Image (cartoon, rainbow, N blue to C red; front, side, top):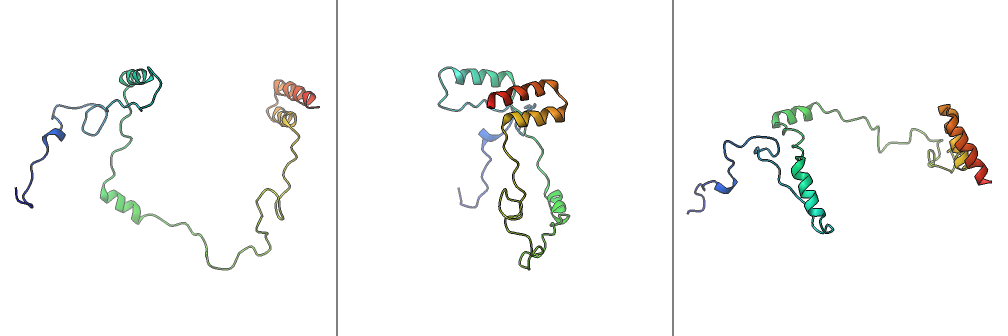
Length: 141
């Protein structure tokens, strides 16, 4: 066969015209797959469960090139400001927002699980959480 001559399509990749149903785009059901290295008996159980419950279909249809180009034309880049310009907050420490260091608020004191449960009980108005908080606080001391 010459190098540039048209070649026939592979017959093993052709889908019969009567195939339909969920699964892959060609209409055939998805193949059952099991990983290697499973403990004895689990591969068979996994195959059985996959045959009982079909695998999900592909989530969406492919987007056309025209729709993709339209979405790309309508995209608006967010305004990030002047990345190479001077700072807009000259008096703010570099560590601002980090837990500790200048400019950051002091971290809340860690009073243990009892204090946390007590705050939760107050917020939720829950007597059960209040009892649990009192018990946790008594066990901490």
